[in-house]
Length: 322
Ligand code: ADP
Ligand code: F6P
Image 1 (cartoon, helix red, strand yellow):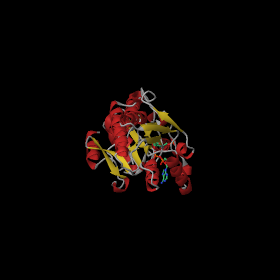
Image 2 (image 1 turned 120 degrees about the horizontal axis):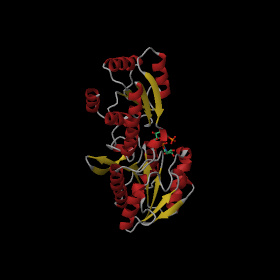
Image 3 (image 1 turned 90 degrees about the vertical axis):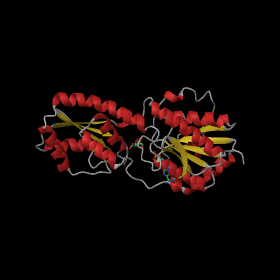
Image 4 (image 1 turned 90 degrees about the horizontal axis):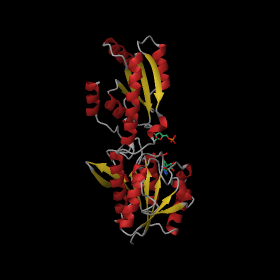
Protein backbone atom coordinates (compact mmCIF):
# COMPACT_ATOMS: atom_id res chain seq x y z
CA UNK A 1 0.00 0.00 0.00
CA UNK A 2 1.81 3.19 -1.14
CA UNK A 3 2.28 5.90 1.48
CA UNK A 4 0.49 9.07 0.36
CA UNK A 5 -0.11 11.05 3.58
CA UNK A 6 1.80 11.14 6.85
CA UNK A 7 1.48 13.02 10.13
CA UNK A 8 4.25 14.47 12.28
CA UNK A 9 4.23 15.55 15.92
CA UNK A 10 6.64 16.78 18.56
CA UNK A 11 6.13 15.33 22.02
CA UNK A 12 7.57 15.66 25.51
CA UNK A 13 10.02 18.45 26.35
CA UNK A 14 10.85 20.50 23.27
CA UNK A 15 14.47 20.82 22.12
CA UNK A 16 16.44 23.07 19.75
CA UNK A 17 16.47 21.35 16.37
CA UNK A 18 12.97 19.89 16.45
CA UNK A 19 11.96 22.47 13.85
CA UNK A 20 14.84 21.43 11.62
CA UNK A 21 13.63 17.83 11.78
CA UNK A 22 10.06 18.93 10.93
CA UNK A 23 11.39 20.90 7.95
CA UNK A 24 13.52 18.01 6.66
CA UNK A 25 10.82 15.35 7.10
CA UNK A 26 8.27 17.55 5.32
CA UNK A 27 10.54 18.30 2.36
CA UNK A 28 11.68 14.67 2.12
CA UNK A 29 8.06 13.49 2.05
CA UNK A 30 7.20 16.06 -0.63
CA UNK A 31 10.20 14.87 -2.65
CA UNK A 32 8.52 11.44 -2.78
CA UNK A 33 5.07 12.89 -3.52
CA UNK A 34 3.80 12.39 0.06
CA UNK A 35 1.71 14.95 1.97
CA UNK A 36 2.70 15.87 5.53
CA UNK A 37 0.38 17.23 8.21
CA UNK A 38 1.61 18.58 11.55
CA UNK A 39 -0.35 17.55 14.63
CA UNK A 40 -0.43 20.25 17.28
CA UNK A 41 1.00 19.83 20.79
CA UNK A 42 2.12 16.23 20.68
CA UNK A 43 -0.25 13.30 21.07
CA UNK A 44 -3.00 15.70 22.16
CA UNK A 45 -3.24 16.86 18.55
CA UNK A 46 -3.75 13.27 17.38
CA UNK A 47 -6.44 12.64 20.01
CA UNK A 48 -8.25 15.85 19.04
CA UNK A 49 -7.62 15.33 15.27
CA UNK A 50 -5.97 18.78 15.13
CA UNK A 51 -3.48 18.97 12.26
CA UNK A 52 -2.38 21.45 9.61
CA UNK A 53 -0.84 20.65 6.18
CA UNK A 54 2.89 21.41 6.03
CA UNK A 55 4.28 22.72 2.76
CA UNK A 56 7.77 23.48 1.54
CA UNK A 57 7.04 27.15 2.14
CA UNK A 58 5.54 26.69 5.60
CA UNK A 59 8.71 25.01 6.86
CA UNK A 60 11.06 27.59 5.36
CA UNK A 61 13.53 29.22 7.76
CA UNK A 62 13.11 26.61 10.48
CA UNK A 63 16.75 25.54 10.61
CA UNK A 64 17.65 28.49 12.81
CA UNK A 65 14.49 28.51 14.95
CA UNK A 66 14.29 26.88 18.39
CA UNK A 67 11.05 25.43 19.73
CA UNK A 68 8.47 23.69 17.51
CA UNK A 69 6.11 25.34 15.00
CA UNK A 70 3.60 22.53 15.66
CA UNK A 71 3.98 22.82 19.42
CA UNK A 72 5.20 20.04 21.70
CA UNK A 73 3.94 18.74 24.98
CA UNK A 74 2.97 16.00 27.32
CA UNK A 75 -0.39 14.23 27.15
CA UNK A 76 -1.25 12.04 30.17
CA UNK A 77 -4.47 10.89 28.43
CA UNK A 78 -2.34 8.93 25.98
CA UNK A 79 -1.46 6.44 28.74
CA UNK A 80 -5.06 5.23 28.46
CA UNK A 81 -5.35 2.26 26.07
CA UNK A 82 -8.86 3.23 24.95
CA UNK A 83 -7.67 6.75 24.12
CA UNK A 84 -4.81 5.30 22.08
CA UNK A 85 -7.14 2.93 20.23
CA UNK A 86 -9.44 5.84 19.35
CA UNK A 87 -6.44 7.84 18.18
CA UNK A 88 -5.29 4.98 15.97
CA UNK A 89 -8.78 4.61 14.51
CA UNK A 90 -9.04 8.33 13.74
CA UNK A 91 -5.61 8.38 12.09
CA UNK A 92 -6.77 5.65 9.73
CA UNK A 93 -10.18 7.27 9.19
CA UNK A 94 -8.45 10.55 8.29
CA UNK A 95 -6.28 8.79 5.71
CA UNK A 96 -2.92 8.88 7.49
CA UNK A 97 -0.56 6.16 6.22
CA UNK A 98 2.01 6.78 8.93
CA UNK A 99 3.27 9.05 11.72
CA UNK A 100 6.63 10.55 12.63
CA UNK A 101 7.05 11.19 16.37
CA UNK A 102 9.81 13.55 17.47
CA UNK A 103 10.47 13.29 21.19
CA UNK A 104 12.23 11.53 24.05
CA UNK A 105 12.00 8.04 25.47
CA UNK A 106 8.47 8.51 26.72
CA UNK A 107 7.26 9.71 23.32
CA UNK A 108 9.00 6.71 21.75
CA UNK A 109 6.98 4.45 24.08
CA UNK A 110 3.82 6.13 22.85
CA UNK A 111 4.89 5.63 19.24
CA UNK A 112 5.52 1.94 19.93
CA UNK A 113 1.96 1.61 21.29
CA UNK A 114 0.57 3.12 18.08
CA UNK A 115 2.77 0.75 16.04
CA UNK A 116 1.26 -2.18 17.94
CA UNK A 117 -2.19 -0.85 17.02
CA UNK A 118 -1.24 -1.01 13.35
CA UNK A 119 -0.33 2.65 12.77
CA UNK A 120 3.06 2.78 10.99
CA UNK A 121 5.24 4.98 13.21
CA UNK A 122 8.87 6.06 13.10
CA UNK A 123 10.38 8.04 15.98
CA UNK A 124 13.11 10.67 15.93
CA UNK A 125 15.09 11.25 19.17
CA UNK A 126 14.27 14.85 20.12
CA UNK A 127 15.26 15.74 23.68
CA UNK A 128 18.08 17.73 25.29
CA UNK A 129 18.63 14.89 27.79
CA UNK A 130 20.39 12.39 25.47
CA UNK A 131 18.88 9.61 27.58
CA UNK A 132 17.70 7.35 24.72
CA UNK A 133 19.52 4.02 24.37
CA UNK A 134 20.59 3.03 20.86
CA UNK A 135 21.41 6.51 19.59
CA UNK A 136 24.72 8.20 20.38
CA UNK A 137 22.95 11.51 20.75
CA UNK A 138 19.58 13.23 20.50
CA UNK A 139 18.41 16.41 18.81
CA UNK A 140 18.97 19.38 21.11
CA UNK A 141 21.60 17.90 23.44
CA UNK A 142 24.47 19.68 21.67
CA UNK A 143 22.74 23.07 21.76
CA UNK A 144 21.76 22.63 25.42
CA UNK A 145 25.35 21.79 26.36
CA UNK A 146 26.59 24.88 24.48
CA UNK A 147 24.07 27.00 26.39
CA UNK A 148 25.18 25.52 29.71
CA UNK A 149 28.85 25.93 28.75
CA UNK A 150 28.44 29.65 27.98
CA UNK A 151 26.62 30.18 31.28
CA UNK A 152 29.24 28.27 33.30
CA UNK A 153 32.08 30.26 31.68
CA UNK A 154 30.38 33.45 32.92
CA UNK A 155 29.77 32.04 36.39
CA UNK A 156 33.41 30.99 36.66
CA UNK A 157 34.49 34.67 36.25
CA UNK A 158 32.55 35.82 39.28
CA UNK A 159 33.41 32.68 41.27
CA UNK A 160 37.08 33.50 40.81
CA UNK A 161 36.64 37.12 41.76
CA UNK A 162 35.04 36.11 45.07
CA UNK A 163 36.87 32.83 45.79
CA UNK A 164 33.56 30.98 45.74
CA UNK A 165 32.24 27.50 45.09
CA UNK A 166 29.54 27.88 42.44
CA UNK A 167 27.01 25.11 41.91
CA UNK A 168 25.31 25.19 38.49
CA UNK A 169 22.24 22.99 38.13
CA UNK A 170 21.50 21.75 34.62
CA UNK A 171 18.59 19.79 33.14
CA UNK A 172 18.60 16.17 32.04
CA UNK A 173 15.81 14.69 34.14
CA UNK A 174 17.34 11.40 35.39
CA UNK A 175 20.38 11.61 33.10
CA UNK A 176 23.71 13.29 33.82
CA UNK A 177 24.90 13.68 30.23
CA UNK A 178 24.44 17.46 30.01
CA UNK A 179 26.21 17.87 33.35
CA UNK A 180 29.23 15.72 32.47
CA UNK A 181 29.72 17.23 29.02
CA UNK A 182 29.25 20.82 30.20
CA UNK A 183 31.70 20.16 33.04
CA UNK A 184 34.26 18.70 30.62
CA UNK A 185 33.83 21.64 28.23
CA UNK A 186 34.35 24.24 30.96
CA UNK A 187 37.00 22.56 33.09
CA UNK A 188 34.65 22.44 36.07
CA UNK A 189 36.12 20.85 39.18
CA UNK A 190 33.22 18.44 39.68
CA UNK A 191 30.16 16.98 37.94
CA UNK A 192 27.43 15.43 40.08
CA UNK A 193 25.02 13.07 38.32
CA UNK A 194 22.27 10.56 39.20
CA UNK A 195 24.31 7.75 37.62
CA UNK A 196 27.42 8.29 39.77
CA UNK A 197 26.23 9.28 43.29
CA UNK A 198 28.91 10.54 45.71
CA UNK A 199 29.04 11.09 49.49
CA UNK A 200 28.98 14.63 50.89
CA UNK A 201 32.38 13.96 52.45
CA UNK A 202 33.78 13.32 48.94
CA UNK A 203 32.63 16.79 47.91
CA UNK A 204 34.13 18.36 51.03
CA UNK A 205 37.43 16.53 50.53
CA UNK A 206 37.68 17.86 46.98
CA UNK A 207 36.81 21.40 48.12
CA UNK A 208 39.59 21.31 50.75
CA UNK A 209 42.12 19.87 48.33
CA UNK A 210 41.45 22.45 45.57
CA UNK A 211 41.44 25.31 48.12
CA UNK A 212 44.76 24.00 49.39
CA UNK A 213 46.19 24.30 45.88
CA UNK A 214 45.23 27.96 45.91
CA UNK A 215 42.47 27.81 43.27
CA UNK A 216 40.18 30.84 43.55
CA UNK A 217 37.05 29.03 42.35
CA UNK A 218 35.36 25.64 42.56
CA UNK A 219 32.71 24.91 39.94
CA UNK A 220 30.27 22.06 40.46
CA UNK A 221 27.99 21.18 37.53
CA UNK A 222 25.05 19.35 39.05
CA UNK A 223 22.46 17.36 37.10
CA UNK A 224 18.92 18.07 38.32
CA UNK A 225 18.41 14.35 39.05
CA UNK A 226 21.46 14.14 41.32
CA UNK A 227 21.31 13.44 45.04
CA UNK A 228 20.98 17.10 46.09
CA UNK A 229 19.50 20.17 44.44
CA UNK A 230 21.89 23.06 43.86
CA UNK A 231 20.22 24.99 46.67
CA UNK A 232 20.57 22.08 49.11
CA UNK A 233 24.24 21.50 48.27
CA UNK A 234 25.09 25.21 48.59
CA UNK A 235 23.43 25.23 52.02
CA UNK A 236 25.31 22.08 53.09
CA UNK A 237 28.62 23.65 52.08
CA UNK A 238 27.86 26.97 53.78
CA UNK A 239 26.67 25.21 56.94
CA UNK A 240 29.97 23.30 57.12
CA UNK A 241 33.43 24.62 57.92
CA UNK A 242 34.49 24.11 54.31
CA UNK A 243 36.72 26.88 52.92
CA UNK A 244 34.75 28.16 49.94
CA UNK A 245 31.69 30.35 50.30
CA UNK A 246 29.02 28.65 48.12
CA UNK A 247 26.38 30.09 45.79
CA UNK A 248 24.21 28.41 43.18
CA UNK A 249 22.48 29.00 39.84
CA UNK A 250 19.72 26.88 38.29
CA UNK A 251 19.97 27.25 34.50
CA UNK A 252 16.50 25.81 33.87
CA UNK A 253 14.61 26.42 30.66
CA UNK A 254 17.20 28.47 28.80
CA UNK A 255 18.67 25.04 27.98
CA UNK A 256 15.51 24.13 26.06
CA UNK A 257 15.45 27.12 23.69
CA UNK A 258 17.72 29.15 21.51
CA UNK A 259 19.15 28.92 18.03
CA UNK A 260 20.07 25.29 17.24
CA UNK A 261 23.81 24.60 16.93
CA UNK A 262 25.38 23.63 13.61
CA UNK A 263 25.56 20.03 14.84
CA UNK A 264 21.89 19.88 15.86
CA UNK A 265 20.72 21.46 12.60
CA UNK A 266 22.56 18.84 10.55
CA UNK A 267 21.63 15.96 12.90
CA UNK A 268 17.96 16.95 12.83
CA UNK A 269 17.96 17.38 9.05
CA UNK A 270 19.51 13.94 8.47
CA UNK A 271 17.16 12.32 11.01
CA UNK A 272 14.08 14.01 9.55
CA UNK A 273 14.91 12.72 6.07
CA UNK A 274 15.72 9.24 7.44
CA UNK A 275 12.38 9.08 9.29
CA UNK A 276 10.34 10.07 6.23
CA UNK A 277 12.22 7.60 4.01
CA UNK A 278 11.81 4.80 6.58
CA UNK A 279 8.05 5.34 6.69
CA UNK A 280 7.81 5.51 2.90
CA UNK A 281 9.84 2.28 2.65
CA UNK A 282 7.26 0.61 4.89
CA UNK A 283 9.16 0.61 8.21
CA UNK A 284 7.23 0.89 11.50
CA UNK A 285 8.10 0.73 15.22
CA UNK A 286 11.60 2.10 14.60
CA UNK A 287 13.72 4.83 16.18
CA UNK A 288 16.11 6.76 13.94
CA UNK A 289 19.45 6.41 15.75
CA UNK A 290 22.72 8.34 15.27
CA UNK A 291 25.51 5.75 15.04
CA UNK A 292 29.10 6.27 13.82
CA UNK A 293 28.16 9.39 11.89
CA UNK A 294 25.09 7.90 10.22
CA UNK A 295 21.35 7.54 10.75
CA UNK A 296 20.02 4.02 11.26
CA UNK A 297 16.37 3.07 11.84
CA UNK A 298 16.45 0.50 14.66
CA UNK A 299 13.34 -1.37 15.83
CA UNK A 300 12.36 -0.04 19.27
CA UNK A 301 12.23 -3.58 20.72
CA UNK A 302 15.82 -4.19 19.54
CA UNK A 303 17.32 -1.14 21.29
CA UNK A 304 19.92 -1.79 24.03
CA UNK A 305 19.04 -1.31 27.72
CA UNK A 306 19.42 2.16 29.25
CA UNK A 307 22.87 2.98 30.63
CA UNK A 308 24.86 6.14 31.39
CA UNK A 309 25.30 7.76 27.95
CA UNK A 310 28.99 8.39 28.51
CA UNK A 311 31.62 5.75 29.14
CA UNK A 312 34.25 5.31 31.84
CA UNK A 313 36.88 6.69 29.40
CA UNK A 314 35.19 10.05 29.81
CA UNK A 315 35.27 9.66 33.59
CA UNK A 316 39.04 9.08 33.35
CA UNK A 317 39.55 12.09 31.07
CA UNK A 318 37.49 14.17 33.46
CA UNK A 319 39.49 13.02 36.47
CA UNK A 320 42.81 13.68 34.72
CA UNK A 321 42.00 17.10 33.30
CA UNK A 322 40.30 18.79 36.20
P1 ADP B 1 9.79 12.54 26.64
O1 ADP B 1 9.21 11.98 25.38
O2 ADP B 1 10.53 13.81 26.45
O3 ADP B 1 10.54 11.50 27.44
P2 ADP B 1 7.55 12.12 28.44
O4 ADP B 1 8.19 10.96 29.10
O5 ADP B 1 6.84 13.13 29.28
O6 ADP B 1 8.56 12.98 27.56
O7 ADP B 1 6.50 11.52 27.37
C1 ADP B 1 5.82 12.44 26.51
C2 ADP B 1 4.42 11.89 26.19
O8 ADP B 1 4.53 10.63 25.55
C3 ADP B 1 3.58 11.61 27.43
O9 ADP B 1 2.98 12.80 27.92
C4 ADP B 1 2.55 10.65 26.85
O10 ADP B 1 1.60 11.36 26.08
C5 ADP B 1 3.41 9.81 25.91
N1 ADP B 1 3.91 8.61 26.60
C6 ADP B 1 4.99 8.53 27.40
N2 ADP B 1 5.14 7.27 27.84
C7 ADP B 1 4.11 6.53 27.32
C8 ADP B 1 3.68 5.16 27.42
N3 ADP B 1 4.37 4.27 28.15
N4 ADP B 1 2.57 4.78 26.75
C9 ADP B 1 1.86 5.67 26.01
N5 ADP B 1 2.20 6.98 25.87
C10 ADP B 1 3.32 7.40 26.52
O1 F6P C 1 13.06 15.94 29.04
C1 F6P C 1 13.51 17.23 28.75
C2 F6P C 1 13.41 18.10 29.99
O2 F6P C 1 13.89 19.38 29.70
C3 F6P C 1 14.17 17.55 31.18
O3 F6P C 1 15.55 17.79 31.11
C4 F6P C 1 13.47 18.28 32.29
O4 F6P C 1 13.61 17.65 33.55
C5 F6P C 1 12.01 18.24 31.83
O5 F6P C 1 12.05 18.20 30.41
C6 F6P C 1 11.18 19.43 32.27
O6 F6P C 1 9.86 19.14 31.84
P1 F6P C 1 8.76 20.28 31.69
O7 F6P C 1 9.10 21.10 30.49
O8 F6P C 1 7.47 19.50 31.49
O9 F6P C 1 8.79 21.08 32.96
